[in-house]
Image 1 (spheres, rainbow, N blue to C red):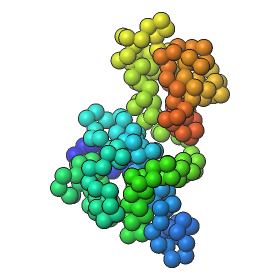
Image 2 (image 1 turned 60 degrees about the vertical axis):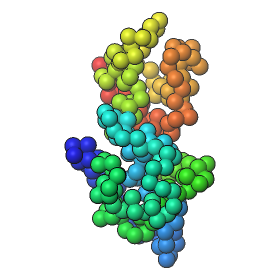
Image 3 (image 1 turned 60 degrees about the horizontal axis):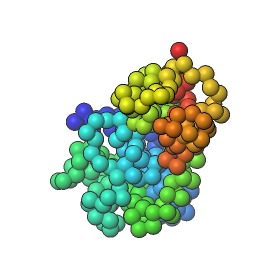
Image 4 (image 1 turned 135 degrees about the vertical axis):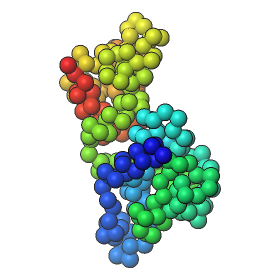
Length: 232
């Protein structure tokens, strides 16, 4: 129940997608469409399902024992009717994780159908769906909140929760150990390069992985914003 309430608290701070915006994506008739679904997915669903649907969202990466949210592993069917039902009713349905919020009271019928259409496309034509998500990601502004979630989910394992280089992997990674980010004074441009390309490409530790294919530009910018809050 705590995880479900926490999920709802994150959802409430997301921007509300209005019916008027549906006309921007779907035309004057405001019919359901895939591009509108991608927009809503980026705003509402990526927190748990990840920006690419692989399940590596801010919430799912931060919380222990969070259920698998990888949408490419179809568990509830891939047809529009089944997907719309799950999105509408969420955890109120039998067999659905308690962390899945019911969106029936939050989204309009057009919005529900549009998200279902997008998720169905993600199963059927993944490359096209990811292209739409990348286009939507460009409209998201970098923030410390987003950066904190990504950092705790991906970076703290080595660099530690407080950035002091004392993460769980620090006992294994030696010569050099994970860098103490509280001591970092590198400019944003350098941080962006090493996060994107990894340590080896920057003549640093080869244990530092390249995140350029996993994180969007805005996500990397968000991580940089958060890293700078750790500096002492």
